Image (cartoon, rainbow, N blue to C red; front, side, top):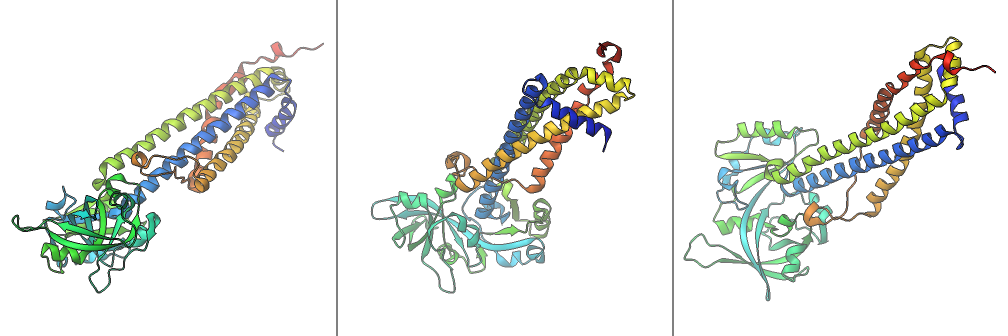
Length: 411
């Protein structure tokens, strides 16, 4: 057995008593490390969970990349059409990069029932629209298929349905602006077949879904004219580089925007999570290290006579330092074990039971989501252990200042 490890084991067995100062200090250090680890796990798990959930929602609503004419960039409405033939590029259908692509047309509308009316944006989509992306947010009903016949079905958010006092199966009237200023609004009738709620107030307050062919007819567009296309990329695709490639391939009047550009404010906000988590990690590691430094110093001073005896028997300073560092590793590991156990219990409990609720209007989610990949969890533990041991090497240098002739007394 390693000499330093053997001495460290004997020290632990004699220092575990509550009657010794070091025993109490060690327990405080273990508690501090455990609580710090709990805080770090909660901060990391909730931050990653919020980023993942919010990003997933924005992508579900608009895809990773949107292709549309430059005239439509500053509006939610499809003002200028583009021809689908202009999008028939092999690059757009790269199977290694593109998971899904669909066309859309967006148009402003006034929705009216017998007693209520509400303005909204109708997003016309075709049968290629990936409804499964919105399935997690479906409240009731069934998403339409939009098959060969032009559909009169409509999908509303729960927010709009409540404002209009609508239930599944109800009929509503939609008024669309006529391109001719002197003409009367164009009227269409729709049946409500599905209700969703994403938690994004701007989207839930405005967007509805109908058959794209309805809007093409209202705009006087042909079947080949669309407002734009939205692309869902595969997990391994590089969004920025792929968006640049598409942009270079398309005609000059067509723009390409990434989801983080469409929702820049939201993505800038969630980017702040990384800084906040970094601050928490640094503070918690420093607190744990300071507690461990105190415990190590107390342990060395309490064992100064033992240090003197070991030196008189021929042990050098480095060997004695390793003895105390082995004890520090044991204390840190024990604190991490308790912290990991408690932290994972809290995170798993939140994931399953949703104890902590949030205001969707502010955070875009109703409960705190949790995401903590195993490699990141293991890496965090290794980081904490490594940093603490490296920083504890400095206080362990006090061993070299202990003179055996001053601390060893014979009676």
